[in-house]
Length: 287
Image 1 (cartoon, rainbow, N blue to C red):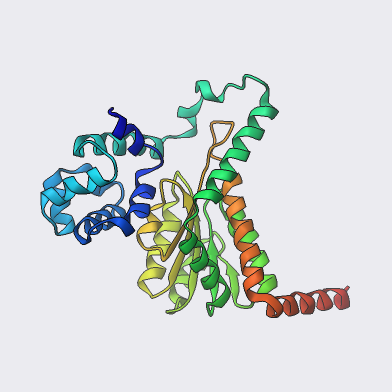
Image 2 (image 1 turned 90 degrees about the horizontal axis):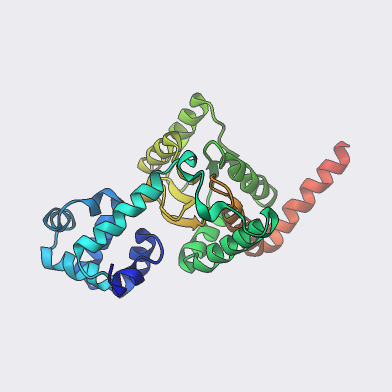
């Protein structure tokens, strides 16, 4: 790998592409959007296939990967293939990794890993995506939240706080009938918040896609490799999932959720405070 390829390999490719869109030519942006719309599959074909998918010429594809810092299309694909292996990796494959063996004790390593994960996650959140997410969660007519096997905890956590601050918030349960009824009831202007981290939950992806087809706006909380829900999402908030174990961590994702809660609280201001006060009064009177 050349020096330029080493530079280009910093960070997941889909994140690099998203960050580069504003500085690309119109043709190069078409290539970037084609890759993001069907990531990572779109980038695994030939130059000619990607050019046809994007509606541009093959030289435009070559210029695009060069603008990302790669020496050529083969170097771009090599990096993409490496990320595919990481994205699909199971916890079992992570056992025995040298970097998971603590040199100075489990507590010290955990402190380093989690501190770095939170700092990287918050530092790399796209401000425009974050602000738009806060606006959607504050102003939408109705908000519904769903998560996967582990990330359902985050959906319930964010949902519980939103219920304190505003009305028409629903946490979607795991049974199939509830999910089908949610899709059937979805209307344009509703917001669906999906939490989906690798290895991605096909039930979450399916519900999000169907809700988007019915006009819902999707907010996606995911990892740096991006759930397939990203193809349909209005906003995407990725988090670092590094952990001091073979299992992905939701520490960075929880930091994103806490940051969103703080920003929604600020945005709703006095209206949110009055709702919290009313709920507190009802709780005291019922006790």
